[in-house]
Length: 187
Length: 187
Length: 256
Image (tube, rainbow over all chains, first blue to last red; front, side, top):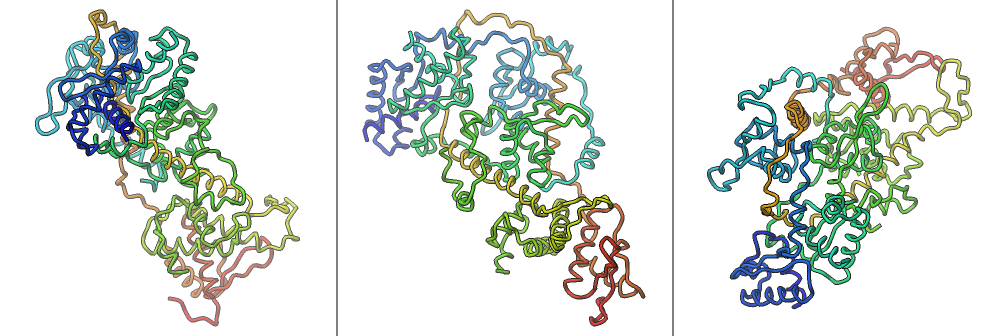
């Protein structure tokens, strides 16, 4: 049982990632007293040290966080900073196009339009300085809004956003598509 | 040194999270041959199993991903309320199965096997990033060929395409097989 | 049995092969030895029920209907009298079982259906493994260098946008009404009956065909079979490959 509490806490620490695990929250999830949870997390942290684990557990008051070790930081940085690619992936290009025409726009909107996750593509674009945060949506979620940067105009040789080619609505083509595609019964 | 490679790889696995660690990328970071990296990652994965670690390492082709274990999934769900994964329609699933085994394959072939139009099902799969175009048939029609993506392996928990359930003709026990097919996914 | 069949959701089939597999399973018969007459009858009754409920019957279902009817009629021929002269350009089928191709098709489809079920299970299992989002990494001074130049053009980006729109267009539910079929089997039956009744002589079968419209031809054929089965009309044929004529049966009342 004790063993399992440790394993469950390690699981929750991993899942919480950068945010860290609040002891009170873990106490709720496991249905165990908060003080006991803190003691178990501390025991887990020392076990990580004793066993010479690759990762470490940091404590900030009642919040615990799984983290990488200083000794490997150069590898982490090298990993996070891939050699500069001169081209953009298809995913990044699509995301960039959507941001360019719909800005300011949230990542969720981009994902809805593309139908796939845009997490990585957006951070690539931010990393390359083509897209930047431009505030937050008002209201509940306060999702981050993104817009293109000056560097974007530079890279694509545009004087301003007004220089972006206009996108015509291709209604007739759509009708033709429908006409040619036959009818499909799937949904 | 060997020990350290394992620890560095574990660190990178943690950092990459649900994006997963591509063996080629890890090879760049560590300056080690890609095949050696794959072997080391597989060794690390078995060590995780042997030591009864809280976490596990999943392999999808040449991409490796640190993940929680299914035995603790209820705790994770209680902690994080992960979004429910949308299941695929039967039409999309059947289309996907055919693409998986016959790839690269044209939409027409899929339609011949299923006996119905696969237009919508195929574009759903492309939209969800499970299937991608992979060129065109040589010759007159130049029909588009489709194949499954890396994401397909991840979503369906397959180490590689060789992990797909066998497509052999089930002899006398077929009725029963069909009936029980949900249960015997082990081999 | 009959009521049980009504309970099945009529539009829950993935296509004609799926429907056939369902009927074969329900009839508890061997897929290698399908009683074609029985299965065809049940298949037709499904199609009619779908039409009665005004569900769109996709053309694939109608094509399969005519395939089944073709196999059924081939099986009625005594196997000794198999045509082996290809004079008329008629395809030989020798000692082959006319069901062979369909059985192979059904087997293949069934295998993929079984695999699809396994994949569904895999997907459900995968949902029990969770991973955290990638860590946010603040890079040291060494990496905060000037971004290098990018080798991308405006055309690349516009093409990407086109791709997204193309995908969206394919995914968007279609609202356009597509005319699938003008006739129901019942209407065709009425039409054929009155055509036959108001004619002094037997009507050539081919006259009932609207040239070039496959759907309507299938419907006509189904309607005719139904009329024969119900005993309203009779078919006559002078010999093998001769034209088929349809005439009213005097012993029945007029069908209006």
